[in-house]
Image 1 (cartoon, rainbow, N blue to C red):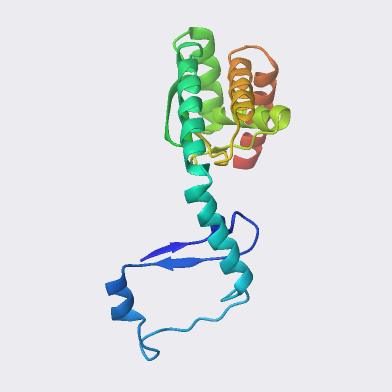
Image 2: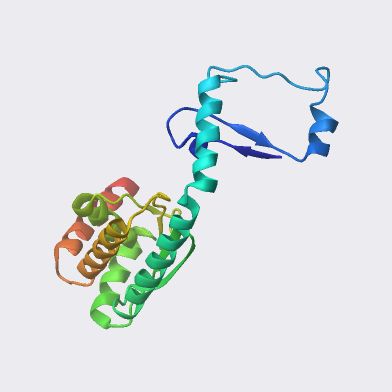
Length: 202
């Protein structure tokens, strides 16, 4: 059984669905005495079902999946090309529009000292030097993959346009370039983050 929710209505109304093979349905839900009827605030309403059906139609017939695949290939290609330009950027990987940018220690001594300083306070803190400027300066919301992780997740919508891709690529290039300018605005932010982290751990 697979439970679907959240994006099933395109984000417009709460909706969920339970998928299963027919033989599973017949073994579990084909009679009322074996089925569990669950009621909830958003349960079993026509609006949610209509929204879900329209969303599935658009995904299969509206070219949205193909657009997402095309945009994802472009972003992966162009973000991956940045690995050669920026020491902190180690790898770019993903599938479709689920993309991860992995950062790590650089080779040059000046950048390595800066990396070690910020990472000594809290492992994974470096990524905030990228995520904060992305949001503050470019209005792009990203997320670090987990506590202590050096991978930034990018999960844009499937309806991404070429203009959106160019905007994302430019924003990442600018934010990552800023992290390579020592001293610079990004590292002023780094000092602030280090101060907050040290006060929080005290």
